[in-house]
Length: 50
Image 1 (cartoon, rainbow, N blue to C red):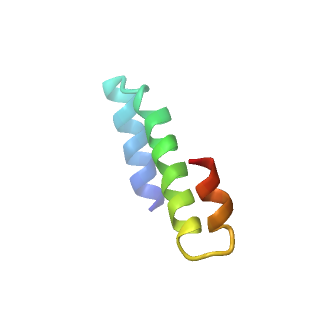
Image 2 (cartoon, rainbow, N blue to C red):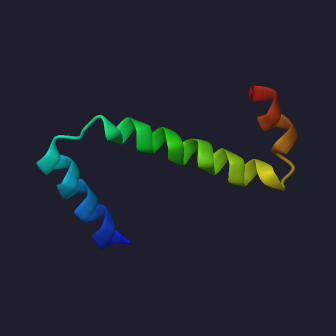
């Protein structure tokens, strides 16, 4: 996994695709919220955010 991150970072630096970083962070956060909110006691509180 660490090699993938290093290789992806090199890709971003080489191709000057820095605008992808906020997009990936946002997608990771939303994915984490979906996973946590799926089957937990936190679900009712997460659903009120949306």
